[in-house]
Length: 238
Image 1 (tube, rainbow, N blue to C red):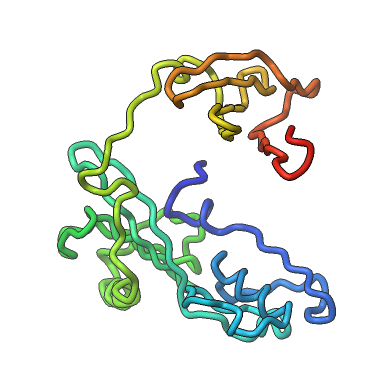
Image 2 (cartoon, rainbow, N blue to C red):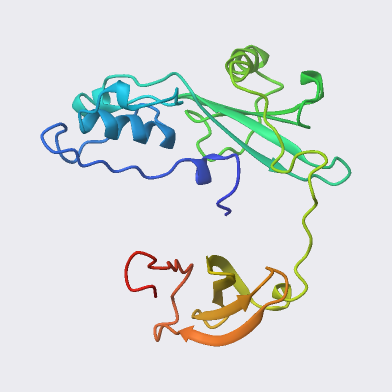
């Protein structure tokens, strides 16, 4: 399992909404929504005028579906995530999900459409995405690719000519996960889940050389993960 994929297990997430006096409790709505729809829905629930939105934003409100679970929202939702197959460099998977199908189009950013590798899944017959139907159902592929064509071309996370990243000379030697970094003044503070399931603190002036300041928190249950640490600037400064 991985949080970062182009597949249902990672992309389909729980969304629970409790809008007072709008929706009946304990209902499940099948229509498609995206996280970028949440802002528009909150704006409508808060009765804010569209004039309060200074620029055009993607997404749309799903409040009508909260009122009536049978009201449709959108025909498709979209996503993108890269991978690095051996010998091909980075390719980006642009995906489109409808109520029944998902198509993922893998190709290099800006590359010709005929160079893409395609994956097509039918969730009515194959909810676990075990069979790629792209070669067997070209008409469905064509329909979904026409939806993808309405979206901007995917771009790499690092633009061509940008300064390349580098492997940190210190931190890869540690057993840690989910690092969280904040900057206070001219100093960076890093907190991460260590092999003991607690948090060690690291300090750096340049994000390259780090000094381990030791454990700052240990969960006696051995199950603490992914710290979020904040600097209380307007409060006590801690």
